[in-house]
Structures are given as C-alpha cells and as structure tokens.
Length: 234
Image 1 (cartoon, rainbow, N blue to C red):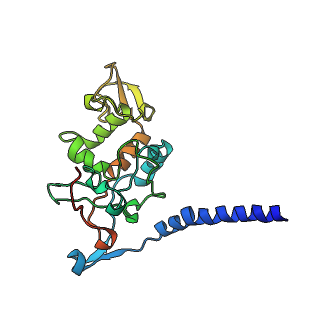
Image 2 (cartoon, rainbow, N blue to C red):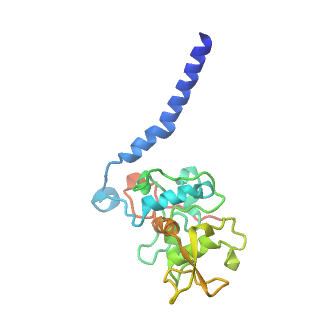
Image 3 (cartoon, helix red, strand yellow):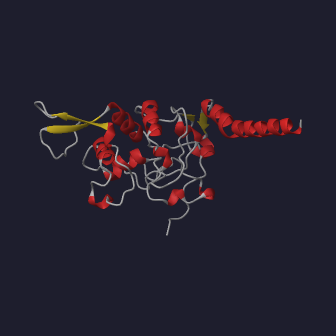
C-alpha cells in the first residue's frame, strides 16, 4: 500500500512540475492580452502590437529541427538578472540611424507567431534575439542580408575573421544543380565547379526568413521594460 502511495505521489509531483513549468506558461503565452501605451509614462497612447514579418512558423520549425536552440538563446535578460543589455548589439542597436538607442529586454510578446518560445539552452554561440537587425545593419552592409545568412549557413568559417566559429555547416539545406543557361538568382556566388550551382532549399529559405524576423527591438510599453542600460560594459 505504501509503495502505491509513493508511486502516486511521485506521479503527482511530476505532474505538478509539468503543469507549472510547461503547460501553464504555454497557455499564458497563447492568451497574451493587448497592452496599451500610457501617455504619462510612455509619452504616447495606443495599443502595442508586436511587429514581425517573414515565414515565422515554418522557419521556427526548421530552427527547432536543426537544434539551433542548443547553442543559441533568444532572451535578453533584465538588467537585474544579468548584463545582456551591455553586450554589443544583442539587445538592439545602440545607435540606430533612425531611432537612436533601441536596446531593451525580452518579453513574452517577442515570441508572438511561434508555437514555442525558443529561449535556448546555452550560449555556445551569440544570442539571436536581434540577429536580423545585426545582419542587415552591421554584418551585411552593402550586400543582401539574406545572402549573408545563406553563406554563413553553408560555410560558417568561410570568412577569415570567422575561422574560429563553432557553428556547424548546414550544407544539407542547400541543393547542388547543374547550370543550364543563366545561373539561378538565388545561387551562392561561390563553388569549385563553374558548371554547377548551389542554391538554398525551401527549408533554408524558411530558416533565413525566420532569422531575419528576429528584430526584437521594437519600442514597448514601460510596463514590459525595466528601462535603458545605465552604464556601459567595461
């Protein structure tokens, strides 16, 4: 009898933990209510709606299927819980040419459009909360941001300054085909054999579209943010 009670208690404990850690947050995420800006605090009125464009759901599936969350986080911690606000460009751009300092912490609304909030497991690679913004504003200046990401996914150590990158190659997300007439407009601009071309598969396109959607520096109501950084990292 006591063994049966022990087993039932064990299942109950795991059930409560499962409910508290997974089920309850998932339900809460799916029922996020719109928030309003406060004229007194935010300097404007209106309803806050997260803005994201791209193949978010399809790309998120490819992101998850390839274990990107194992090495990359998508969460800028509040300043009381860490120093993410001071990491260069992770939380947004310090000097956006049009908007100024756009850095802020992550909130639940940043994961709208996704089935799961892929906050990540560890940071073997940099946080990706604003990778779409970083690519278009810093890494891919003068070229296509999407092309920059395709090149990185195909060969992360192609650029000399990235020779120590620990990111695995995702060449299996690309298709090699013979060149017949003109090269494909989305073919990568390198290859050992000029008679062949390497183009992104539909999965690669979905993943890059998802990565480009990661621009989580949109202004939010003060109720969601703990404020701008108060000092620079040394």
